Image (tube, rainbow, N blue to C red):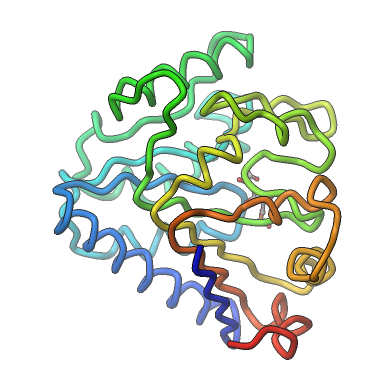
Length: 244
Ligand code: 6PG
């Protein structure tokens, strides 16, 4: 793993840097492998990034979009990560509908939908049992508590090592999420984190030692590239400590 930490001045600089890096990795994947598989993060931070990507001229037919986690709601629900990305980006570009691979949330059974999506990913990547596919890019956010995707502190989802997709749990609310081993297989993982509320968790995540079940983002140690893109409000506390 080669970890790069970049702290930029403010939110707009963070979105600009995240856009540049994401576009660079998309173009690298389509050039080298003929397609790009990218998994999106949810929450509020990435929405302006998705809006900025939609304004780019990219080889949309070569880009396949997935989600790293999803709230267990229909895509029409205001909480839906799929709904947010469709509104901010996917509905605004000529990306073929068959290139969009949302997490299913319609079975009224999160575990069943998790198994369905696990099988969908294995089919798309032609992965055999026990094999974890390599996404070209996985975008991640981080919660104030240090969670990422829907891998929340001290939850069972953190310990799943034999599946691609599992059921996450946020305060009793089910979610679907990539597992730690699936995220760690990615060629490039990009965290995009903004705001002072993230500082305490970032200090734990970048500390020499800390409980990685209390701060799940510590478990993201991909074999490929790992970028932490932070605005100063989030990253100033660790900026001095990390040799850039
Ligand atoms: C989600 C996300 C989650 C998010 C963090 C940060 O479904 O909410 O995937 O992991 O990235 O909670 O959220 P903000 O960007 O809103 O702070």
